[in-house]
Image 1 (cartoon, helix red, strand yellow):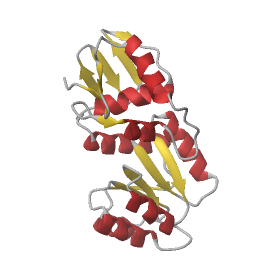
Image 2 (image 1 turned 120 degrees about the vertical axis):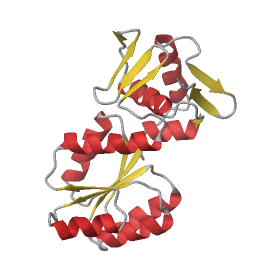
Image 3 (image 1 turned 120 degrees about the horizontal axis):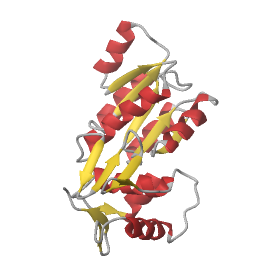
Image 4 (image 1 turned 180 degrees about the vertical axis):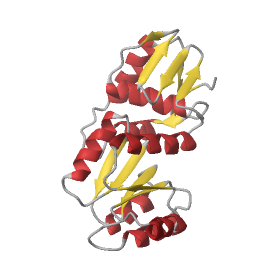
Length: 219
């Protein structure tokens, strides 16, 4: 899942980005409300983590503009404002969830996993297809009860495919889910990851849709 982190705290933003990447999310950072709205307009994110204390505009106004442009785009609000009235205003403006600073990273992870399941076809943190079981909480994959050794990119790629089982994911969609802005991507990187996964998974588990992308059949 591609997460847009809207946060101008120069210490917090990269720390959150790194932590979310380790959890299998592709994370890009912007520091202003106007930048956030431009990214939302371009469609280059699946969910937004929005800090309300931005330098150029009120965060609740950013949220309202997002809802006008993308009514179904999940938005999780981060804020130091812990009053009940502040939380109510955020939810009334269309926030899907609300997390008060300081927050535990594990709680942010859990709330984003809920959003991720809502966007995909999976309904649990355990996704079982044939003999393959992917645990999004433990970040592990088992085949017939045996834990597979996967690189971070391989895990992210398999998670993206299994969470969208039955849907075709294009090459661009998969690359966007693996790499943040500015990361160098070799022309055959995706194919290499797919090839490595296929060596570890049942035959034909990942199907190629020629000229379009890849898919995993639903359970």
